[in-house]
Figure 1 (cartoon, rainbow, N blue to C red):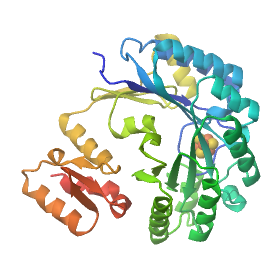
Figure 2: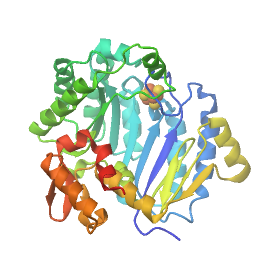
Figure 3: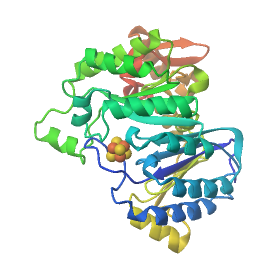
Figure 4: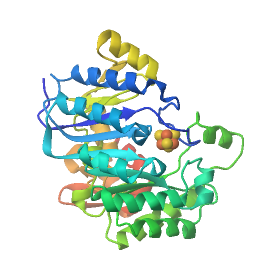
Length: 374
Ligand code: SF4
């Protein structure tokens, strides 16, 4: 059965020029399999033609999509566009690293129909960039921002990271002020987290500090919300800010509202009608599976109605939309007590039948839904 609402299409580009020591996303640094991967990806997409009738967002993420040669990207886009028609007002995003860009490459992205660039800046401080293991420096980024503003699509998203060891509000403020001069439509401000299997995770396990303290992280989070709020940004998800509601990332909203999306490529996840499936996190295993069977799905899960309810709560409390009261089992005594507790603590507001997290509520977003679980 096809889903009624238009779906999002995600493409995982599993190639990076180097690995950043904090990053837990799947990617490899050997570009040798790029063309094989692209062929497999189109073949995988063709296998889902009967399952998705339309897409209204395309998101190339990874990994680093901007490492792909322009001719290969053009081939890939032609194959994706042939899968299913994209709605006329589709959001089409490509994630880029600053030092992969050139004026010509940005024009190529426009000609391929990308109307949104998501630039992984992370910081504008060279010491911080070295600490984070990034390949670019402040000067690369400012030059790339100039090019994007001169030749790129109007819709610019910028990714930043804060909350690492030694990070101060003064330094964070100076990065925010500098990027705002380029008038981005969207900012994703991610708090650094540690995954065990990353070099940062392993260093932290041996006592080498990588993260700011929890108190410093909370201060940085609250500062970010206030600073960007005062400058007119809508804080619509824990880590995400948009110039106004039209610039919220339409593709990511699908994840948070459990709308249908198809993920193609190694390690990609998909969802439709309460069923989730995912691909292996290996370029070799992915390509081989698609070449042999036409599909790479390595696992599949049918969500129960209770799992769906709990996911709706967990995801809803991460967004400013919050959750509808009827999703909270309003008749249960536990529910009324939990709502009263959140309102009393200033962690949520109640209006128009919805319980919405406040900025302080966002600080503990992942714990809010647990109050409503038996
Ligand atoms: S942070 Fe980006 S560039 Fe760095 S390893 Fe991860 S995906 Fe690659």
